[in-house]
Image 1 (cartoon, rainbow, N blue to C red):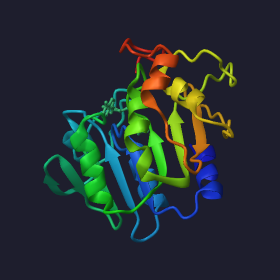
Image 2 (image 1 turned 120 degrees about the vertical axis):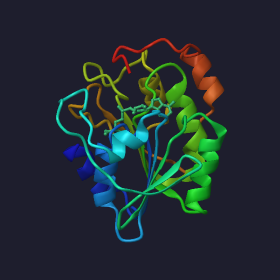
Image 3 (image 1 turned 90 degrees about the vertical axis):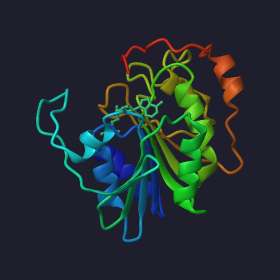
Image 4 (image 1 turned 60 degrees about the horizontal axis):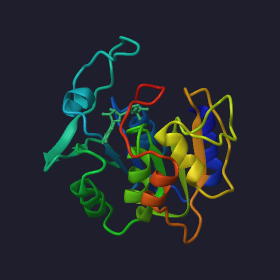
Length: 219
Ligand SMILES: C[S@@+](CC[C@H](N)C(=O)[O-])C[C@H]1O[C@@H](n2cnc3c(N)ncnc32)[C@H](O)[C@@H]1O
């Protein structure tokens, strides 16, 4: 994560708006909250039915067994949860692929562009491709996309991606910031290029991703 923060610091300016797909217990969302300047906004998306307990209650994480984060909820309407913060922090508790999720993001952004998009939601099948295709128009030119588990640490030049997240990264045009961190299958970084629009159907066909079998990470 430190190396990712270093990259964000060096390459993303201004950094006022962050979109995160896959919030889980809100660990990374807390980091985005701290990174943002006054007036900054972070929108997280997660479909987990226990989102409110995960974020505002005292929870035991399945990974470490330690007590999870606690966050106060300021408002909770139409599955848009606003968290108590000196920044504008929201969680949309919906599936990232649902049209109402995109509408919710648009509603919250009110015309602002996203400077940094963190993809850490669905990892397999066409899910990551659809996620980026869905939200790509919110990411400004020069904004950064980070795909968690978007690389193969043993083969950074991967020719046959076997995970949706890897296929998404592979499908993006160069140049790519081939920075790998010790995050399972790496954090894959890319800066959005002017005019680039991902054609999800073509990519899904090209990589044979029209199935929802679980990927190697089991995510
Ligand atoms: C790896 S966790 C996210 C971890 C978090 N970014 C962090 O670093 O603290 C993945 C999350 O993605 C969510 N997720 C998976 N598929 C999703 C989908 N289609 N729509 C919304 N959320 C999804 C899961 O509910 C899970 O909480």
